[in-house]
Length: 348
Image (cartoon, rainbow, N blue to C red; front, side, top):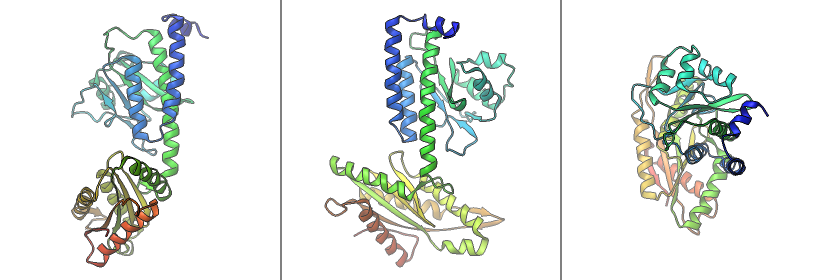
């Protein structure tokens, strides 16, 4: 053990060290049991707030597995954000290189002393007024930044506390890497929506939970109208853009507890948790209207498109499995197609 680490451990009693080691074990078990990325980030935030007794905590992570920058998005508590900043740090930024080399907690003063230019990403960090910036690092790979505000006691972080948060950050980085691997194997690369097989796995679990808790659950089946025309007229690259635009609208109209997936070709499917048929139809109509109002500019051409949607709410005793419920939504979609397209139909 290094002299520095011995000194940092010396900041705390033996009893506290043993207690914190047990805490780290529990944190590792807890974080690695969460596979949903949004829930994992929230668990990390709460863990850091509780362990470090801080007034503010934030995490910069990649929005998706092929992103090239770490973004704050909504992953924070206790900080006041300003509209002037994007709060984004490119993965090739000198700050990321500095954190990778040092493998320690740093401050804004450390960044300024390092000679890193105060550009927009650094300005965003400075605006947060953080007390500590901690790398989320595992296997020499940076998967994000953890930003801490001051402690409730207003006391500076001790060397021991810095060592403790580094250990927590390392466990968080491993959990994030595992979640990212799952994300890669269950996500459609084109649309960034979930794949069909994973959707069915989760839907089956949610159906059982819905049945046990007597809560509603609905499914939407969506199909782009006359999609083949885009491929035939403008090429498959245009068709890809259309798919991505529709997927983006669908994603914007779903919550964290919901799930949207690419069902195949130009078809999509959405699971709406704790949502009855009436509300599901309103959400479907909002998606339909948003897509109808899209103005897609491709190769100098303004393109418009529409989508047909089928809605089905889980019926106790009828929808014994995920396949039956999706089939009922698919029949409602077929009805929308047969009666004029660009409409929402509710399953019988």
